[in-house]
Image 1 (cartoon, each protein chain N blue to C red):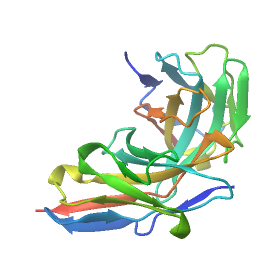
Image 2: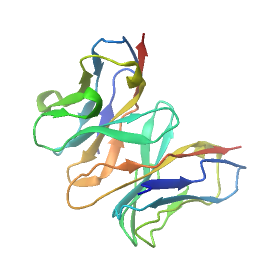
Image 3: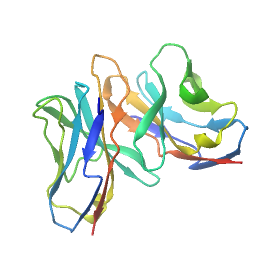
Length: 114
Length: 114
């Protein structure tokens, strides 16, 4: 079975600083990886996804993530945080042989300080 | 398109009561799923369906039933509610064309069982 680990349930950065949200996965088959964002009292929306094409994936709102197979990681970054980035971020993996099943990490709440 | 809709938005049940959470999508997506979101645990897959008449269990199926009689609708039934089922429930849908497409999430139903 798949599992996803997000290090740091809360991350706080200053506006304009680098955002780094960590995600590690375990998988016995090639994974498909996703980052979702959830704003308060809303559903989840897709930021970006990795589906075995380019290892550096660019998403919406200036976010990007790099798939590193050797480290089983898919960390999310943004060069310069904006106040509107404050939200909860979830990493998810779907099984390579049953991609209908998504497994989510426990989430990281990003706080952006003025 | 309305996307994925869920009703009700909020619900309070007493232990032992039954209810159905409704989910509908108007994107002609074949794949639909139900998740529950609990603090510090991310989203956990309850049940999913790859098409009308086909359902399967996720990580945490106990206490929940589903059926899929049409492409559009995927209701989640709680037959005898328990306090442990207090959670926020999300329905999601995606295409299922042999690739892991992104999942589109509904706004959620916040359920409290007393």
